[in-house]
Amino acid sequence: MTREEKATVIEDLTSQLADSSTIYLADISGLNATATSDLRRACFKANVKLAVVKNTLLAKAMEASDKEFGELPEVLKGNTSLMFSEVGNAPAKLIKNFRKKSDKPLLKGAFVEEAVYIGDENLDALVSIKSKEEMIGEIIGLLQSPAKNVISGLKSGGGKLAGILKTLSERE
Image (cartoon, rainbow, N blue to C red; front, side, top):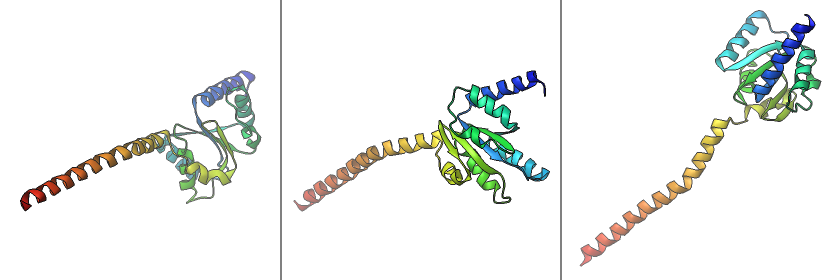
């Protein structure tokens, strides 16, 4: 690979890192061709972009990026696959589901909304991260709950009052 090609790859990686808020680094070495193809298919269905990159080029792209990746460049050893996603927990769910059939891919690290996770032991924590849409839905549900309680209280109170008036009118 010539210097110009490397510079182009670093530039492309830097722009991808800048555009994405969710970046996962995984080790997929040891997967055979069929398993790798299945993983790529699963990534496509989950709207996760999967790319295998050279560690040195990715490290240089991380340096050139405006984002603070913390300890992520330190995990760039061995085979590294890069996963980009719009949803914070999509790659983690994908990795966890894929591991039901195989012991790979291993999570090396993740960058999710400016938070850095290092190591495979963080996979369960990453799976439980809620997406932006899920959080908005929960907040709307919480905001609607008090209003629903007031309305149901008013409706039931009106029914009680009407029942009392009806009973009093029947007595006379």
